[in-house]
Length: 376
Image (tube, rainbow, N blue to C red):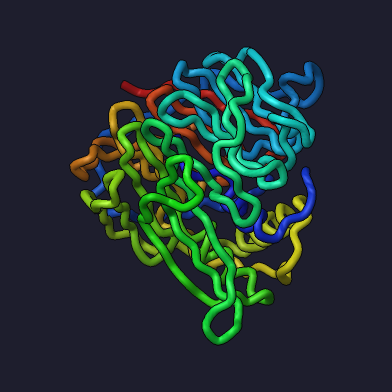
């Protein structure tokens, strides 16, 4: 159950209004102490067509997840619904629809399956965090959120999920400040545990700082035991931290990583993508000028599979490459996706006990969900 949907989702809740192909030169960074064993992930199926059956035409995919039976759930922001497919990609049903009535969604921004099997969907325009059964029954509003709700939700154990949240409030000197944190929620308005927190001044003219200190600052995930894993999005270090559900730090994984400069084309395309995404959701309240980091992040994603293995995606390489560890911090193998093309730089994965799926946040032609075979 991944942690990362669109990295801009939280910011969009703060500044949005309304519902709603890249050619790169590969320059992989050197990572010391890499293991010998290599595993290749194969794409065994896909969901999504450009034209045809409306159940397979995906609009704007915001987040993907598995339910506890291995079915694939897709949150489509533009259609304001969750679509359910079998593990092989056959359509089962649609959960909810666009509207403002009971159980309907407006501009849904995140979705996850918690440990008791319920589907949680966050949409502040419809009151907050909604719960559904996998049969599509609306169970009501779990927690009301109207301003700056938890986002990038990741299901954990029992009724819990992990999410990032930010709050904007006046400071002692009367200026606006931002507090951002990653925490554990148990159907509560406030987190019961905080794993990371940071405060900084709110500058409406500095979108780059706002992004880098909030939704583009960390990646994180959780497993069904409630353990949480996170890493800072930085080019200066490679560090994964593991926390128990109660916040106890029990694991740190470090590597020496060479910094890799982005090409001019990468920087240009990243800038265009970020601004285009914010404009597509009607973002306002800040000056839409973004200056990408000239170096690639050492880590770009973290996942945990059903064997409690931690999958750490290298940010220094454009095609998907994962360093896979056990929860003692020992590196087990490296996983690659040979079939991935240039579009893979925008892929976001979901890896858990049910399998591996991925989608592109910036598809070249039309939106698809890719289904992979999970290695033993």
